[in-house]
Amino acid sequence: SSGDRLLSSIKFSQSQPSTSQTTSIRADSAIISLVRNEELEGILSSMRQLETSWNSKYNYPWIFFNNVPFSEEFKTRTQAETEAECRYEVIPEEHWDVPPWIDPSQLKQSMRKMKSKGIKYAGLLSYHQMCRWNSGFFYRHPALEGYKYYWRVEPDVKFFCDITYDPFQFMADNNKTYGFTINIFDDPGTITTLWPETQSFLKSHPDYLAADNSLTWLTDRTLRPDHTDAANGYSTCHFWSNFEIGDLDFWRSERYQQFFEHLDQSGGFFYERWGDAPVHSIALGLFEDNERIHWFRDIGYQHPPYINCPDTSSSASSGSGTCQHCQPNIFTHSWGVMKEDCRINWFRQMCQSRRRHGR
Ligand code: GDP
Ligand code: MN
Image 1 (cartoon, rainbow, N blue to C red):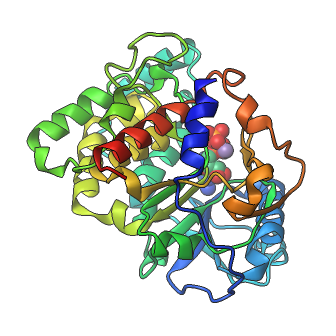
Image 2 (cartoon, rainbow, N blue to C red):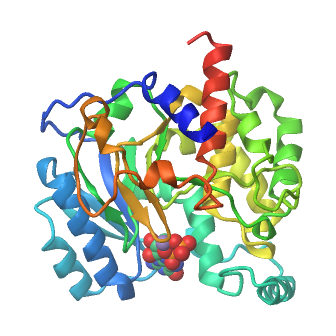
Image 3 (tube, protein in one colour):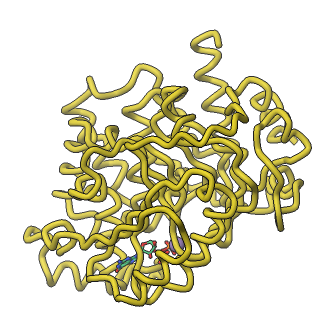
């Protein structure tokens, strides 16, 4: 398929992590997780996976965030999964509470309307709050002061392959801002006015657009399964943000902060059900150069129902180690199997950017 062809052309040109086994750890990097006390078993499972495949060699701290205090059981049992330091942080109310400019009756009405349309999580207020926090607040939590790189981990995710290098160091060595594993289309019903709001922001800040931006990717709707433009110009293709390895300074930048404030004031985190994934992705696509965004093709990862399963036949060149419970060919066979998969759009953008810069 054209997807396979595109992939193989990228395979050999993408800068690959070195396989050196250094265990020097960076003092400015941490694993972070927003999680509920009730999700203890799920986060223990995720921790076990990441500790076994990677962090037991590096011992980066785990920083857990919650809108309510963590239970003693949560603290004891998570700490027992790692030799690294665990920290337990409560989110300040002013970062979590529904902001005062949200009208309670309009909120109730729009939540009911979205719920009746079958929009996932639309009727769950805490989900809206979570998406808003992940969009505009996590990087401002005092516990992350002095940190630069973070790896976001959710409950019940899987890491299939041994990771034989330090992705944080890789980010620094290669001047990367953001790393992802999975790219999918979103439900346009959750973000109907996100792109129009983005355009109104861009109109007053045209200088924020990066020279090597990914606008083509953000607006390429040709592969959308429904072939509609229900998201008003945005393809809805986004980096699936339950996995993120990123540079906190990008989110702390003035341009992103202003963008977030603009979106937040419009009320779309509540009157619609904007996810942090499309918000992050749009910002990265607009304000960051394409080459500073990295697909961690070698990190075997699953957050149900989607999977990034490395092709281990090329493990020698990709730097990834052994993979468990992950069929090597799932990735290449996933074109068309997962109709929401839009990685191919990202590869197209990468090729375009590289051509543009003669790389
Ligand atoms: P999904 O991945 O979109 O299905 O949503 P999840 O239910 O996995 O939520 C995304 C992340 O936010 C997970 O890490 C959850 O543990 C966390 N999360 C969601 N809602 C809340 C909440 O109300 N409080 C806390 N502390 N964490 C939450
Ligand atoms: Mn999840």
